[in-house]
Image 1 (cartoon, rainbow, N blue to C red):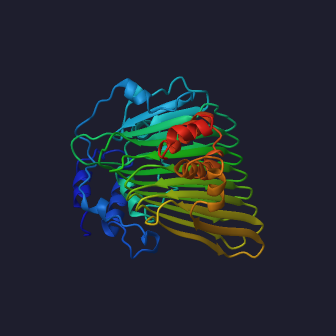
Image 2 (image 1 turned 60 degrees about the vertical axis):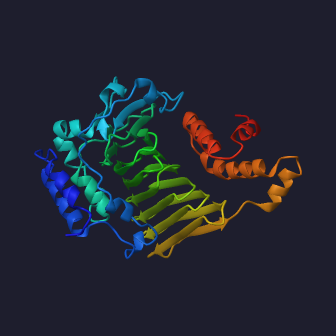
Image 3 (image 1 turned 30 degrees about the vertical axis):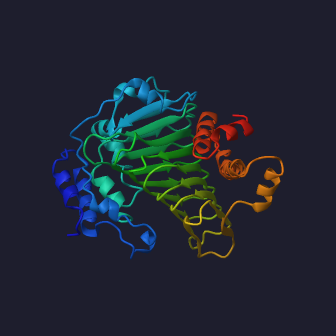
Length: 440
C-alpha cells in the first residue's frame, strides 16, 4: 500500500456507502489504493510535486459544520448577475443560501446526494461514465467520495437563459479538510446553457479541494463553462473537467486561476462526432511561491472537428506555472482544425514557467498549429508610457493589465468580466490609478 493514503481509507469506512453507487465507489477506492498519489516519475506530473497534499492528513469527513452569515455569502456572489445559485460550504450543500426554484421547464438541478437517491436510472447512464478513474488518482479519489455536487440536466430543445452559478466556499473548521465536489452536466440535443463554477477560500484556511466535472453534449448542444478559482493561498486545488461532445456541439471553456498554494487544472475534450467544436481560454496569475499547473487535452476522434485554445499566464515573485496542452488527431479524423497558443509574462527574475504545447497527429489532411511565448514587459511600450508622464510602476501595471484583459475580454457575461477585471487590478500595484486609466 502506498504511504500517505491510509487516512483516506479510514475516512471511506465512515462514509455512507449503502446506495446503488456503492460498488462504483469501492472500485474507485481500489484504483486509488493501488496507484497512490502521482509522483514526478510520471510524465504528466513531472513539474508538479503533490507531496504537500500527500503529507498532510486532510479529512474527507466533515464532522464540524461551519456557519456563515447570509451577507458574507452574498458578498461572494457575482454582483448584478441574474442567475440560479447553488451554494456549498466545506463541500456540503447549503440549501438555505441557494436559489434554485422555480426552475424553467426542461431543466433539472439537484444536489448530487439528492440525485443519487431520486434519479438512479438516469445517473446510472451518465455518472462516472466520462471521467476515467484510471486516468488520475485524484479522479479515482473523487469518485470514491461522491456525495455532494451539482447535477444539471437540460432537456432537448431547451435554451436556459439564466446562468447556473455553483459556489464552493471553503472555511476553516478547526482541522484540515478535504472536499470532493462532483458535478454532472447533461445538455440535450439543441439545448443551450451556461454553468459557472466558483471556488473561493475564506481567509487563510488550509484545505484540499478535489473537484471533478463531467459534461456530455448531445447533437447541436451548446455549453458555456466558466471555472473561477480563488482558493485561499494556503489551500490545494485539483480540478478536472471532462467533456464528451456529439455532432455539431459547441463547448466554450474559460478557466481562471487566481488563488491557491498548489493548483492543478485538467481539461479533457473528446470530440466524438463531426462538427463538434471546443474553445478553451485560460488565465493564471501567480505570486510569491504559488504553483499553478494547467493540463489540457483535446481528442479529435472524428473528421470535421475543431479546437481553439488560448492560455495566458502572469507570474511574479518566486512562483511557478506549468502549461501542457496536448492535441491528439486520431486516425481518419481528416479535415480537422486545431490551434493552440500559450503566452506567458514574467514579472520577476525568480518566476518560472514550463510550457509544452503538443500535437500528436495520425491523419494527413489537417490544419494544426501551436505556439508558446515567454517574455517580460515590452520595453518600447514602457518607454512610450513613461514619455506620457506615467511613472514606471503604473506603466508596468497598465501593461500587465492589458496582457490579462486580452483574454478576460472574451468572457461574454458582463458581471463576471467586470468582477474579474477588478480582481486582476486589485492584485497590481497602483490599483487606484489603474482603475482611473481603465475608466473603472
